[in-house]
Image (cartoon, rainbow over all chains, first blue to last red):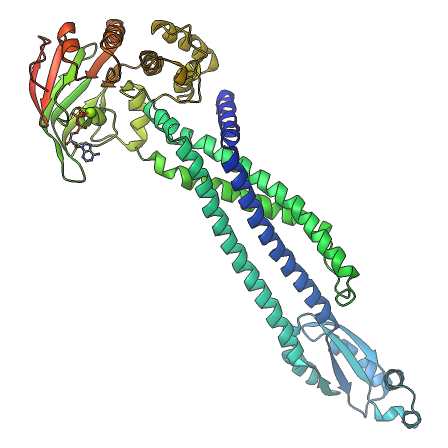
Amino acid sequence: MKRNRMGYFLREGIHSIFSHGFMSFASVFVIVACLLIMGCFVLLTLNVNSVISELESENQMVAFVDERYSESDAQALRGRVQNVPNVESVVFVSQTEAMANFVQQYGDSPLLNELEPSILRHRYVIYLKDIARMAETASAVKDIEGIADVHYHVEIAKGFAAVRSVVTVVSIALVLVLFVISLFIMSNTIRLTTVARREEIAVMRMVGATNSFIRQPFLVEGLILGILGALIAFVLQWGIYSFVVSRISTDGVISFIEPIPFSAVAIPILLIFLVVSVLVGVFGSLSAIKNYLKV
Amino acid sequence: MVQFTDVFKEYENGVKALKGVSFNVRDGEFVFLVGPSGSGKSTIIKLITGEIAPTDGQVIVNDFDLNRMRLSRLPYLRRSLGIIFQDYRLIENKTVYDNVAYAMQVVGASNKEIRRRVAYVLQLVGLDSRTRRYPRELAGGEQQRVAIARALVNNPRMIIADEPTGNLDPAKSLELMMLLEKINEMGTTMLIVTHEKELVNRFAKRVIAIDGGRVISDGMDGYYNYEA
Ligand SMILES: Nc1ncnc2c1ncn2[C@@H]1O[C@H](COP(=O)(O)OP(=O)(O)OP(=O)(O)O)[C@@H](O)[C@H]1O
Ligand SMILES: [Mg+2]
């Protein structure tokens, strides 16, 4: 493409943005609003997932070793437990350590002091990779010779999995809905600028401009508005998120939550914003101009 | 060059605007197209510019066969035509100069070519002292001359004008028609729709008369022989 033409498209696009100042402002505003809502839900999903992963990683199963096994025999099972699929890590706890934990947890009442460590069994504390497959992993562990019993809480695992998938599905649905809404509004906004410019478009067609030529300035306009919207939304998102994070960490009740720092998600968020707004800008302006290109 | 062969046009609402129209306009001719209101003159113009398609019959314009032409060729047909309307159709927020230059920009001319050619056509239509004005700052006749400059600027083979003097007083109409005649003498084919009997008769050019969607007369005598 000739440089002359590029200059023309840019000039026309920018000129149009300024000469329809209010409409341009309105469409940037709509894009910013939609991106912010999308961004909030994306960040919420990421945080819920991160909190749940945190909680999940603390969710454990306990495998009890057959009481006839000596400590060293029991220790020898480690490799086989570790090799069971879906096992992240295992910690061996001997009878004596188990007793010590028990005492520490329930205080040293005289009653407990008389307890012999031998009434407790050697055990493995097992951390899983994916707690949704807890039951299946538990039975695999139980099948190991020398493992007498496995204790686990499958309900908790199911609960976490359910929360995670609900939040993810709701967020994806919302992001899609907002995408369609912003596309619709962007298209209508640019359509208003095309209505304002319909005489100009008619003149262009009359003197023999090609459709792609007529489209360019509107595409440029959509792109500039989209990118502007993405950048503004990004800065606002940063501010809002940092504010919320600072409130969470000073709030006594929920300060145990450790939110993902913005810096960790800044680049992906910026990319998502840019991609979404560029798509909205391009398809919005294409659909807005469509009606003018028939004859 | 325009060639209509037995052209019919029926609009979507069932109005039969043309009922078998045949005529030729050769390169370099000056032709008036006359007829009462609703007779089908604008329909002929729209067929020539490719705004509408014929229901039946053949339309050939500047070697473009409009029956077979792909829609993507339409811009190139339009570049071979200069089109002028009664209501000028200028862009209000562009100056006289930019209105004319715009027509060259949108077909991808270079800046250098644009500067040279726009200055030339504005001088040709007698507007070289008005280049920085906006359309609303001009008289009707001047606005129409801007439209003529714009129609001319891409050096079309033919100018098509649908009632170009419709909004002008008789003196201005005459002036404008003389300008179009001068342009025709420089080699551009002219097809002009008009209602103005005196004007037509005064110029003694070829006159094609339409009534009820048919050609009722076509002669070189320049006589406008029907009552509107
Ligand atoms: N887009 C359209 N849809 C339906 N009917 C139309 C359309 N345009 C024109 N017509 C009809 O076709 C007939 C011819 O119209 P046309 O505009 O060609 O007349 P004209 O000779 O240009 O008239 P005028 O001198 O008033 O401009 C008229 O009956 C008109 O009502
Ligand atoms: Mg008409």
